[in-house]
Image (cartoon, rainbow, N blue to C red; front, side, top):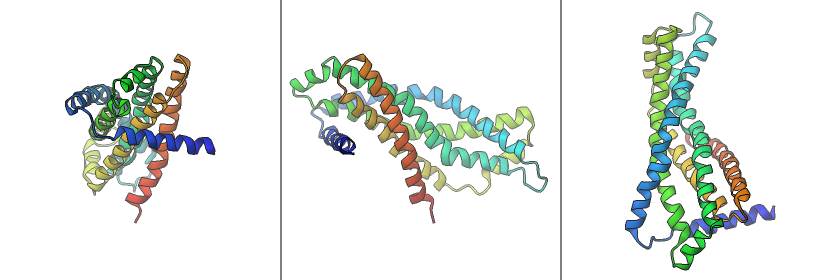
Amino acid sequence: MLKALYSIGQYYFLLTKVFKKPEKRKIYVARIFEEIEIIGISSIGIVIIISIFMGAVITLQTAYNIGVSYVPLYLVGLGTRDSMFLEFSSTIVGLILAGKVGANIASEVGTMRINEQIDALEIMGVNSAAFLIQPKIIAAVFTFPLLSLISMFIGVGGGYVAVVLTNAIPPDEYVYGIHYFLLPFYIVYSLIKVVIFAFIITTIPAYQGYYVRGGALEVGKAGTKSVVYSSILILFFNVILTQLLLAK
């Protein structure tokens, strides 16, 4: 219990350092664009691939499980749309990015710690926490919602390709289901979640790497911890945000 409270306090202390005013804004802006490419653009491929197949699988499973004649076929498109918008393109994509981006952040920052590069920055009078972590947070907060939007529409498109290729249901029924009773707030809800998840995915691994001690083995352990803790917090906040934003 005491160790958990100590970790929470240390994490809060790190965040107070991260969000201090930058020394040189031009350098920070340049680093933000670098992180956008590393964190966001490099993740587009995996998000697209996974979203296509998940949209197709959700569509086919829904279509094949509707065996009752009085169930409208357009519900397949509606179910795929809502599954992608409400859950997959935010929570599941967040878990995937926690593994891909989070582990990379923890190993990068952790390697800099054990190689004494962070100590060198501190000696030069640079706020190492802000210099290393703040651009990652900003880049993730801006790019992850875009990745979520890409996932939504690619997933729905993957479902359409699936029904065209397999003829599980008529494509026009699927398209009608996509448009049926569409609530724009579902997209807003998903994007709000993604912004929170982006903060978790960047700060938790950065914390693990920033305070790592030892050698390469400890850096690997920090990467593993960052993925586990980030995933748990994503699922926890998913429940909280769902209750706050969708409960009537």
